[in-house]
Amino acid sequence: MSLRFSCMSRPAKIWAMCLILFAHQVHPNYALVLAANRDELFARPTQQAGFWTAEKHTAEILAGRDLQAGGAWLGLSKSGRFAAVTNIRDPLQAEKKVKSRGELTLNFLAGKDSAKDYAESLADQFDQFAGFNLLISDGSTLYYVNNFEKIIRPLEPGYYGLSNGNLDSSWPKITKGKIALQQILTGDVELTTDALINIMSSRERAADAELPNTGIPIELERALSSMFIENPERQYGTLCSAALISGVNGETRFSEQNYNRTGHPSQRHFYEFTITR
View 1 (tube, rainbow, N blue to C red):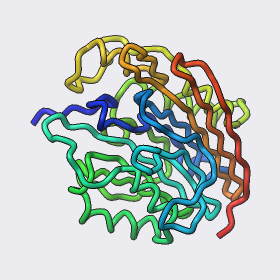
View 2: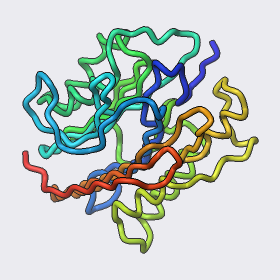
View 3: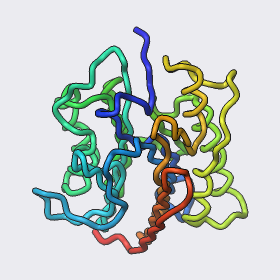
């Protein structure tokens, strides 16, 4: 069976953060360091990152919000919980599923289950969602869940990259991004949210010989090969970059840089707090 993984889909069905780079327990001072870009159709209504409480929940979370389906694509809590989701697209299967993938992050962030218990509880719900990659952490363990390949597993310490295929797919922007992240954490550059967001701003496209074969036209493959996506003719592109620095002592910094439809920076949000469990 030929599979196609992409950020692009029919307008009514697409919403996803399309690139996540993260370092998990690789530095003595940091439990998790992450940089991410969310790519979206311009028409989809969203709310910028901030603290809010979802319906049917009491816990406050820090996240952006999908105003169309009500979920969240990436977020964290002051109790040390973290979650992020990307979509997996298979053109051979119509995306007529019951639930929004944004519920996956929202329910974990606002809940109390351990990452292990929550991840394992999803196995019986895989067919209720269109294809997804999910990262969840309870502050102790980081889990990766993929309903397309039916993967549920804890992640070992290391550098990782995730887009709209499987974890650590050999896509050029994933490879490039992981190298850049590692250089920051092992070099002389000060680790700041600004430095992480700067990584995600690269518009450099991959050479044709390096492009993955995901079943979409080569012109679109080129447009989606950069870390920061500009595709105004399709009314689609990178609308925000997020950076998370979670220290082993609980000190946490989170920043979100928003962009307008022409790819220029607009609002910037920064939050700093100490995790309490």
